[in-house]
Amino acid sequence: MSARSDRSPAAQVHRGAAETFDVSADLAELGRTRILVVCAGVKSVLDVPATLEVLETHGVGVAAYGCDEFPAFFASHTTDARGEPCRAPLRFDAVDDVAARTAER
Image (cartoon, rainbow, N blue to C red; front, side):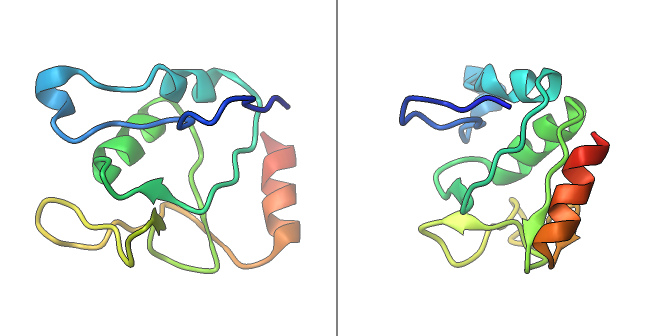
């Protein structure tokens, strides 16, 4: 397992990335590296649905702990362009389940 030593975001897609191509290279790296990243959620200024899509494209498993909606930092909800909640692809309610799933990978 590895860890980031700086304070920059681990992985992100900024809003408007379709025009600016502002997509973090870390997203692809997360798909290549055996790592577990734990965070409280993404920054609300990011394009959450696009970030989730890029993570899925790169084979990065994404889960929420104790909730169905993908968490956001400084926002009560994450929504897509239609205002629909961004659902987490997977939900865990027990730390042991998270550990078991991580060991499978």
